[in-house]
Amino acid sequence: MKPIISGSGIRGIFGRSLTVGDAAGFAAAFGILCGRGPVVVGRDTRRSGPAVLSAVSAGLMSVGCDPLDLGIVTTPTVQLETMGEGKMGGIAITSSHNPGEWNALKLIGPDGVFLRTGPRERLMEILREGAGHEDYRGVGLPGILEGALERHVEGILRLPIVIPRGRPVRVVLDVTGGTAASFAPMLMERMDVDFSVINPKMTPLGDFPRTAEPTVESLGQLSGAVIEREADMGFAFDPDGDRLAMVDERGRIIGEDHTVALAIDYVLERRPGPAVVNLSTSMLAEDAARKHGCRLYRSPVGEVNVVEEMETREATIGGEGNGGVIDRTFHPGRDSGVAMAFAVSMLRARKGLSLGEWADGFRSYTMLKTKVPFGGEFGDLRKLLLDACGIPDDTRDGIWYRRPGGWMHIRPSGTEPVVRFIAENSDSDYIENDLRIFKEAMENLCVE
View (tube, one colour):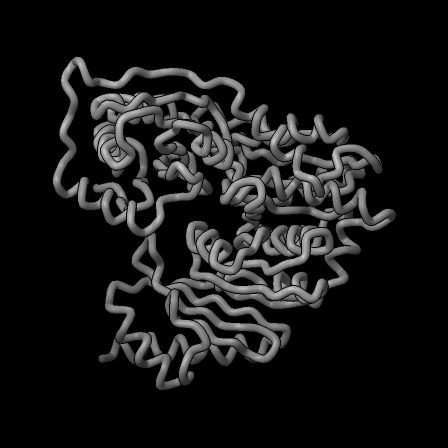
């Protein structure tokens, strides 16, 4: 088996489709892209993390880079540290929401953004050409950079719209044994929040204590804990701490899309302006922006695409519907800590308001996500869909249609051989009709 390689990283099942040799070679190529100098490296809690860290450090040093080990930190922490003076780049060793047997390298440019198009293309060239290694005089040296989590927390607390003291708030943190186990309690303590933690550690065999992705299906335990402990809300994280899902005071799982909508609502009330989310993000984000008379723009799926659209639109707030909030005044990346701070601050700013009451103030939508195995050319499927649906409203990432009360998005996956169908609407009839058209197009393509 081979690892999945792209210009933005490498991932696979450790020991099978991702070996230490793969990690070392890929890190060496990234080191050549960065150039000689310090490259920050942080990892999540996976059992394979120390092995991959050693390989990454060796690969970087072999081409003259000096790896700076941050320890176990969130991905946004790595992004922040990469933006430090003199840093050439950064690597987050994490496979995000994948199960414990997976691991990966996420590559970050010196601007704190996952690799943009130009550097991604250059990296792929280096991988094809092969990395040349330094001799003993030019080899890099390792180092340790301490205090990264503390600096991350301090940065959040310095955001002018964060309210670190005020109305008493009680939360439950479901850290799923990941990087949030250290980071989230530190932030909540500094914000004078009464907190408790569930799922604090990985299992002895190296698995996450619950399904790693913080979706509705995986948060039943958090829901029960919020009710039992009479908390104001519950926060659930993915293993590398860039995404956040929420549970309200009644134990209701309100979903990841609400996280971004809450941030947009809270920020635009205090800092009006445009907002940006990706094409597959809920209408809740549009409703939150409209509430404050602001415009919401959409980008192709992917954090770097959202960030670049935010730069184009001069937006300071945005994110993705998977619970990833981006406040560009802090750093250009998804950050669960920022999302947590905004949620707590909203409760303190709006006296007497609960998270559930806030969520109930928005229109209700139905969202359907499905994927179908597909190894053909998306252009062939696209033609059939255009014949059935007409000209799309957006073609930057597959095809996207605006519908009365919602939208429909069909796109080829960038990580697996499937086509994704995602639709959302306040009227489920639109979703059912679009799904029927999609299925018919797939069947006709198979017949042809």
